[in-house]
Length: 140
Image 1 (cartoon, rainbow, N blue to C red):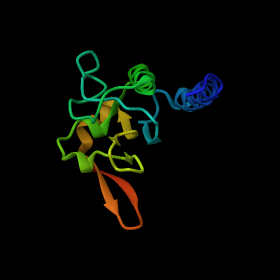
Image 2: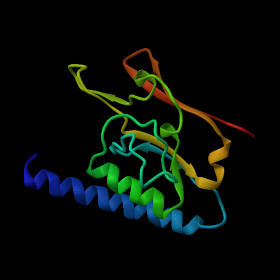
Image 3: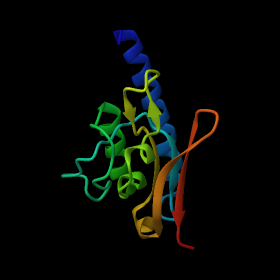
Image 4: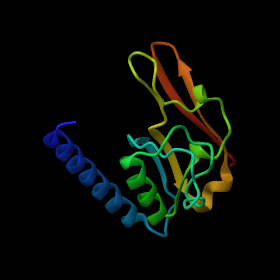
């Protein structure tokens, strides 16, 4: 990736992270947090030092955005829901390369750690029109 493109991407990521952090700071202590989206972050499955933030059932290897996302989640007491449940890769994959040779888990559902026990399942479901949806089930 060209240096200018990489720098622009890092600037956008930093700006987005700052905005999301400001929203979380405004609600700190009062509400539980549910953060869902395309984080473009591969967190992998090695949770040796992040066992309070993620489970062992992520997909692939961690990337730079994944490291930043794990730090962000750790600082804000969030857990990454899709990494706590055993599923076939097709139920974890949120992105596929055009030639279908590469699969990644880059979209995530995160929740405040105190709500972790409420998660019953998180998985990707394929739907027609070459789209994917993520679903999560929780206790009321």
